[in-house]
Image 1 (spheres, one colour):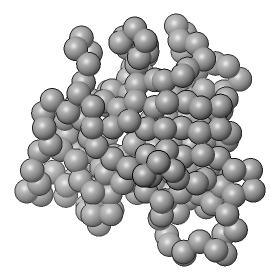
Image 2 (spheres, helix red, strand yellow; image 1 turned 135 degrees about the horizontal axis):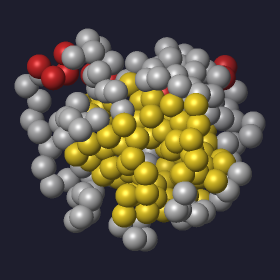
Image 3 (tube, helix red, strand yellow; image 1 turned 180 degrees about the vertical axis):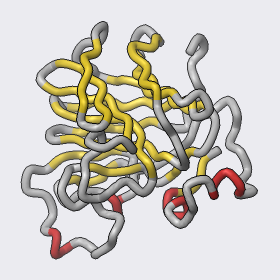
Image 4 (tube, helix red, strand yellow; image 1 turned 120 degrees about the horizontal axis):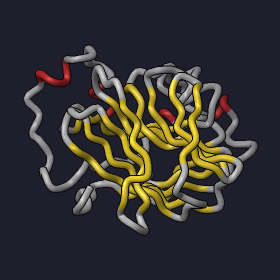
Length: 207
């Protein structure tokens, strides 16, 4: 089940479970765009808000519409649709980026934090040509996947799992055991280059 991000912010942690929201096509995962009002001032969205690019200078904070949902300290952006159940798969094309984070986070994650720093976000990070998992600011190395052009993420809400998928082999590289307590949203951070998201995809056979 997927909920619009703006609506999910108004929910209690388990309130989303009780809403009469129609389930999405069971064969397809969550379909989302990136939520501009959450994007740090150094980030710019493109291609119909499905991609994000980093700019060292970025936009002047004074030129941005003030809101409490924008990340203030770190180059993070969230998706506009929250997940409360089901299996979901999306892919990320990496363009000229050597340092980024991809994963999911609670809808109400602190806007003064970065994904992976606290225990309410679950991410895979790529930096210094290596992959790691990151939870509560603790990193663990991942083997078996090199510099990416495109990677996949498989979210299994009830099973409390988030997996990094090698798209070229259609194989799970690493799985994070999560601790979801309410709605979560796809989350992204980057410090160079671009990321382009592809959502609303069927879960590949064999995953």
